[in-house]
Length: 136
Image (cartoon, rainbow, N blue to C red; front, top):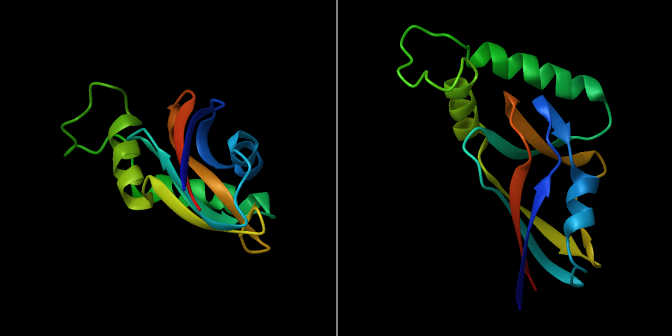
């Protein structure tokens, strides 16, 4: 059996944001065993799983990505939507737009220190649409 829901995460500024609880609130009742696939319908953000305890990880990841893919590089041609737009697209390609998470006992089977991140690469990306597909 396959279920699918679509929802919008609240808007966030640039950074790596722990959204596990917000995602779970939007999911239907999960099966005893299965998979949840999450897909973000945007080209300037991403989804990832990372450390969920120390907020310094999120700050450090933002610093790493902003240094890895810089704004205002002279070789960018796609520049009409602001200094953060082309770098956001590149960062999205690096991180990816989807996650697959196992479901066990009706819950996401994440590790003790794992959380779902919205990786927001625009200064003001707005609400981000997520498609969650649940496979039983």
